[in-house]
Image (cartoon, rainbow, N blue to C red; front, side, top):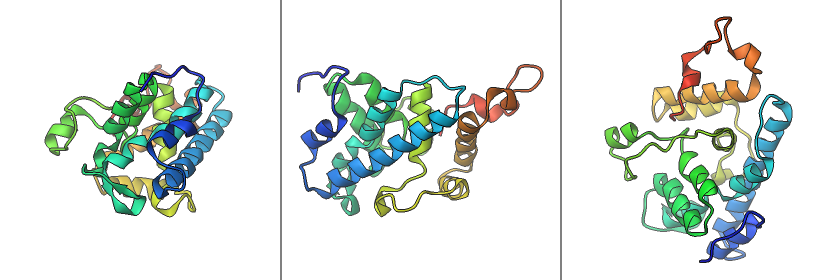
Length: 209
């Protein structure tokens, strides 16, 4: 497919891969809109953050575009790959459209990011490379995504406690990494940094999930 310019409709891209009326398309658009709205709400409160809002909403709509290549019948996905692969597959799809920056959001939002070390240790069916959210926009979408599940179609916004408990079931440190993002997006820098200028919690230094 031909590369796209920056002025595009993310809904139209979803429709390229998921036909109108399909369960997966409806879930992707609903979930993407919820995540995008949540991300913009966070930016409106966090005046200390500088982020590209247009990009944030576009990438929020597209961040799960790779799910169709995975096996997840409850989402209408009849692919062959494990669900954990949907991020890297989404990056592959968007890279093919010239949307490299958006593709990185796809790859780096899964969990709270996945490191090369985790790929090897857990023997995940993923490229062995760091897939960790780095930019403000990547971190923001990764964070906002955790508040909503596609399986309930966004009927329930999760609490911080529900999110951390769910992440801890995979690895205990995941919850701490999510809370580090939570501080970035809810506490002004003056409240997060100590008098020496260093981070008051070393967890803020990590980008892993």
